Image (cartoon, rainbow, N blue to C red; front, side):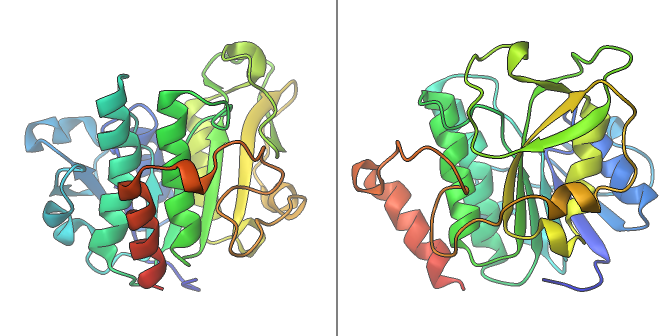
Length: 255
């Protein structure tokens, strides 16, 4: 992975997590590039970021976005529906990695707690995770709980593995948007976070500023395995659509 990151791209920069991620990257001193589909929405992006226009559903439009980046933070998300989940939740990862074409960059990918519970939206997010693991790039995959359902005294971060919380409601865990951004950006330069997949929730107590002990306590994903460490083995590669298998092959080919 890059030892000293200088330029970070935030994918989904105008979203509710993306704006926090842009601000967090700027606070950490990175030259921060914000990918937007519509330049008219650039007013939603914190001041100080470089705005670059591109369409997540079209890899050919993402060349300027990924040029010379050291790190990429994915905070995008679809608004529901099978086609939207495929084109956005999964397509954004596939297309950005293909535009990157194997050039080294540290990846921080946000998906969702409960992503291994089989349903259409989750399955496409999980396929995006698999692409990142197959790419050979350095990465951290963060599966946050429900956004901003925290109680006022509930900000102590907890990192879990195995994705066993499948209630599909806030009982699975909650965490603030700002803390999700904090973890994503912090992971970019953490050796302890490399090649790790985690569920992120908050419990009662104060938030931590030093995340290294949390990252260090986690198990690494197994080399060559498409799913996260401890994940339920319930989505066979043999049963995946041909286009998904082809994209995995291309990701491996860029190593």
